[in-house]
Length: 272
Image 1 (cartoon, rainbow, N blue to C red):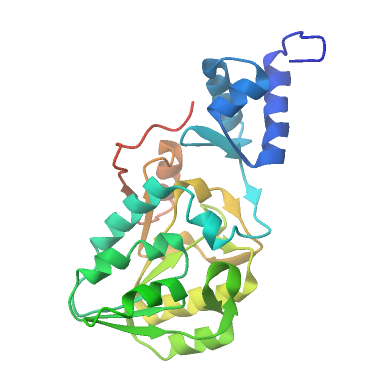
Image 2: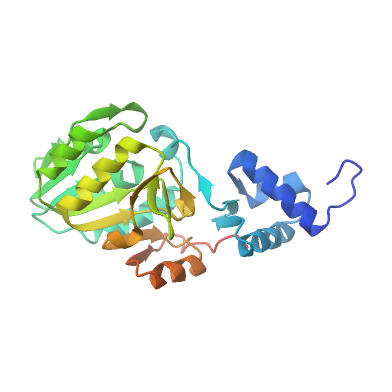
């Protein structure tokens, strides 16, 4: 509402919605109804209009700015609380790709960490990782050989990055590399705001017979300064079913090997 309680016309209200997103990055439909003083239906219509203009992107239950640049990543503790149903669905789908007696790379991050229980059910596995939490959980499993890449410690993400970690990966032959990402889209591919991560991810992909990207829909249409790889460089890209159908079609049209993991609740449709 304006200061004199005169209702905003749709264009004014949508500009106000964009202003709110610039301050909060992501907002739920419920939050926007309170902030704008309008109904859920009105908010969903505004989101749909802004998405059609390419200015916003629907996420489950809310909306975020389109094409948002990441200047830094959240801490591991913050990441662990985000998008849990999507992460479970993605790693469940990724777990179906695992085979006994193979060597796999598991990238750092809370999404890839979700592969741990699936790895534990396999026999004769060798797991290579730059993630301290993943290594710590698997090291007590006598049926899994664990190789940590070493390298420079990134404290906030409990992992190692940089040249030393990449050199370890260059000396290994991997059957499969599971790569995480904080940002991805069809035009820029996989990006990161952290330059030391790039070489590690690229080395893992180069050493692997097959590369799989685990990428949540909430991270789609965001980008970092440093480019890792095009989406077509991955044999498979696994995301969750909150990714809008139009985006799925665009990815498939570009030749991306897309797999959409179904969340346990059936995947609520994107906010409209």
